[in-house]
Length: 166
Length: 386
Image (cartoon, rainbow over all chains, first blue to last red; front, side, top):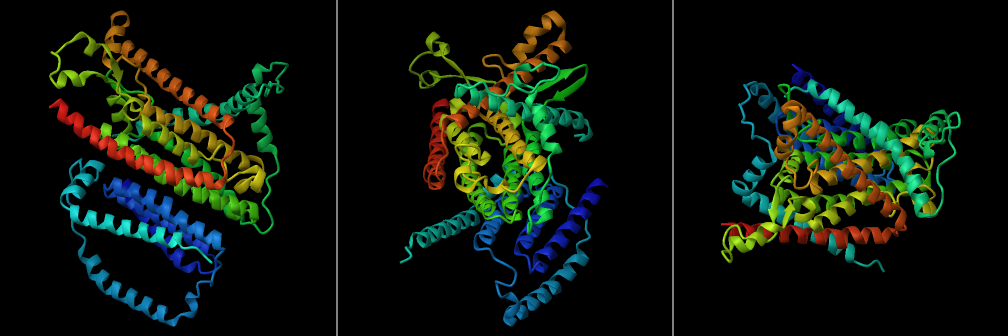
């Protein structure tokens, strides 16, 4: 019962704040803050699903680091609403609409059939040890590839940072 | 596990941390700085002539803060201006929940675990919650509609992001040694001792039970197993705490007071309170990870209880052990607080580029090297033991 209440509240907050990210066109900073609230509500949902480690990482990495960087950029460049010119690009609007329609076509049947019982999981499920074990055995290749991708990103950032402005 | 059972414990802890330690910190800060600078320090506040070596100053400060006018600058964001100090303070207060301040005790049929939330990802919880406090400071700078405030906010964002990396990476060595992120497990692991010269016996150079091998025993505290990580982690945590010498977001001489330039009254007080609670949390976390938590060196829990039970019975022995352990824990915390104050009043503020260099070019590479060395060490010791 408590879990259901928590689920509905955090799911509702997640949806509202996600809408806020898109609708806060005038005030970019508020959009970024809405994104933080979305991340936090998602973390609650993860923890409800016994994926506590993922939930905490969600807070630590996305809410705690990445969106802070967003804020940093918004404040440093003093970006106001409309600066990005999103409302002047009809191509983006068309692509966005198409993506939403496509996603809905996939989502509706998925939602209607997913009313099955949740599988039982052991006490180890979602712990740091279990996830570490899975990552380093079953999904080692994907894990390493993600690592290489991040390394490439870091090297790229260093190269761009080293270029002198004459 | 019943959540409700922990509420009194949580409230007790909150009272200790927020209502006792944080105001005391203002007194400690003023008195210690006075001592170090050959002054007298706070000694004027009195009630009916009783001065209590300046201990009444925290009360006077609190009354002053609450009764002051609360101003929001023109053109500032009223909502965020009010929310920011709360966002900056609350994470510091709730992050103490996972730090164990005692072990596990049975008395009169009940089991007492002296930790509010015993989480599997304990240390990560603190990292996650602490990273949210950044928003409070950044938004304070933005909502003030003040260029100095804005600069302070940007500096906070940059500094927090930089040192979160070093903070996380430098703690990995400790996770590897203890094989867990759960702070209570770390506490129990640190009760053990190891023989410094034990390897000569395992290598077969001398027979088992040679007296000089048994002689030197060292507690399995994080600081002895991970000395480099201790200093890296403490430095990163102090930078996250952004008090001097890492107080570039405030930088009175450059950007006046940085992000809280437009704050007054209790809102201003909340920022300070958050910082002081963070000092206590840092000390608690360092104690739990590196200084053996609640454990008394060379005196494991069961030996202590066994020794005490002869006079007073098993139940009272457990309670006495609990009191001894909580006292030990807070003694270690107080020593670490003193150490942080010592640094805070000894070292001048770094320049902005020095802070960034320290974080990215010294702490991060050393932390990464520490992980490699720790891995090699675990491998070699594992080989010798078998």
